[in-house]
Length: 124
Image (cartoon, rainbow, N blue to C red):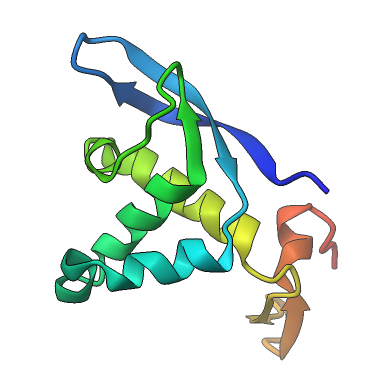
């Protein structure tokens, strides 16, 4: 089983020297990755900060940077942060995600496996 996935940031992280880093690696989250940030005082005060802590734990590299800290994640451009949050969700949410959609012709509602939409296999 592959537990890591490569990614490319839309804008890239700009380090203090001005170098831009766009390529990176994210690993699958463990239960500990999801539990530990809940103990953080800042995450308890600000639930949105939980995403920062989670990403800092599961991103193993951005460019040549291998020490991914919450401060580094906070310094990402919003589009890159959003990109990484979506990647985290795709990697760590049950692949049997179900959603309700409406037929564009008859307006009938039905459930679909959302993982099929990402793979381009939904069809009719």
